[in-house]
Image (tube, rainbow, N blue to C red; front, top):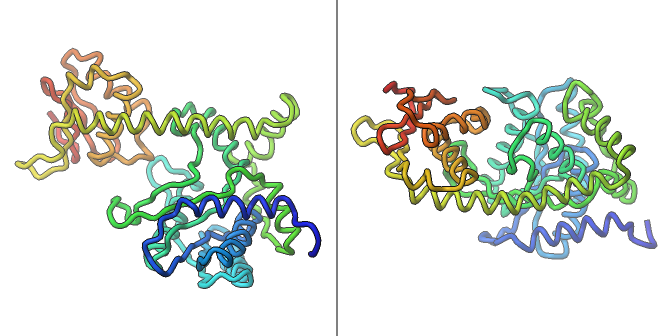
Length: 355
């Protein structure tokens, strides 16, 4: 393996170093955790992290999540952890999780939620400064197309952020953990090239070729069709679009949080003890629709509506309590949250209280 360094290897190492430059280290342990599934993307990330960690005074470990959704999954997880250990991961853990779909979640979303929760919990237990996962530009392009197909808003079309602060308990409390995606500007072909160059043997997940899953049909059929019909570079263009939309969505979300603080009257009912969010209608009505609807969504989430079940249709219906108010009854939202207008107040109450 002597001679010229493979360009993909060099890009991956540079990407990991750039991602870590934004990490604030509060613990002298300087521990990083890498999510390692055993596939080419995560093995390439683990190898790049091992290289950077050795030169930049980091410790690194690996967590392999066994979703227990396939026969032999425990053996696959064990083999992935062993490869990570050979690359220098300490610790190299396997974690078995229970995947339970709830509400509007499908099996893929449920597995993703269980995986992130496991990674976050182990980061907290071990005092890790950040968790690194191996999403690539191809994943970003697929996410953009899925968002378009579902009629999602700018936040969904913005794809995956390269750095996310995640709270480590389901309720949003506790210390936050940085989730890093250093490889978003590398392709899946790059990660396979890295594995070949470094003598790594990735696991080929049979689920990734099963066209029963929508994402796989996007990956195997739709994106190649677009590349053939529109010319090469579609995936890169989609990923570039997500970057631009993410900047726009970040700004709108920031404006919405500021507006929420201004129009909020209270967030609890001192008499009933129920969780309640109350907004002042007049200043909210004056906001631009893009900001106002984000405020309404934030209020519903704060009152207890699950983010996975709260749809754009729900938010539009709440918005009509402001823009099309003619004395109509309130709305039942997911999570037993009820939204109703009382005079110049818009009330979101946890518990399904009727007017």
